[in-house]
Length: 113
Image (cartoon, rainbow, N blue to C red; front, side, top):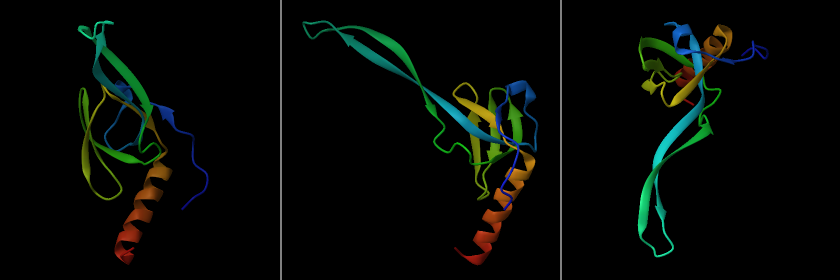
């Protein structure tokens, strides 16, 4: 595996291309929070958002198909995933980095580790 690759950078939906490698940089989760009054009664429901560093940030995914706002990707184990770009922010990673990780994963699967 190579040790140096270009730094990743956030990529806009319109700049995504089939075949390029990306990683989930950030994930935004939306949830409803109930506000309570001192009497204990619920006064209103308030929508909230929280943004987290991607749980698998840095793991390369290969873009297979694009249909706004969804992107279908393949991970290094050959598993397909559908990402919703309203919640997931993607960063482009270099082609060399993506290919090297996919190749190393394939080699590891063949050796049975």
